[in-house]
Image (cartoon, rainbow, N blue to C red; front, side, top):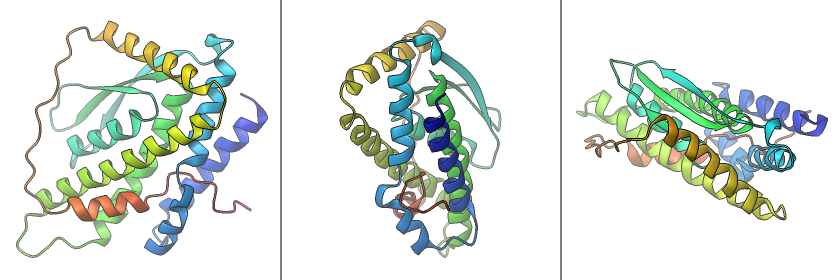
Length: 227
């Protein structure tokens, strides 16, 4: 890893740590979002281009992520929402109160996914704690729907940031397509008979509030000084 790329990743870690602070107000979090995912998206493109001439420098790998309750299935949905735009693929395994997800991707992208997912879980916990459950609504139903909205907003922002970062680097789009193909091939070799999960029917009313929180969640953007 080059010194410049390592410095960018270190800055991402520091900014995410700032966003995870419970003292971070919604206004401060919103200020972080102007270019929230730009830095970590650029990091992913830089690593991809560095590895274009030497695929062994950033090989395709996999890891199993275990997600504890409560709301393990909904947190696994957040993992998938982060993984897909970052060119990783997720296979959800059997559940017995916990969620186990098999994550496939290039080493640099797996690193990005785990970094963001861990931070976003913390930020989501703060968001859920800060917002009261509406009167007469079941708390679990509300929180599950909140997490769905949160995941949808995060995913949309990441897709946009990744697209912008790729467009700024000549030749990156083709390189990234090839990398994604390799990841999907690895997944399909491991799971040749995948079945899609049935759609969920959520009754809670928290999706809109969760979506707004996902729009404010900090994704490592460069707009905050790390001095």
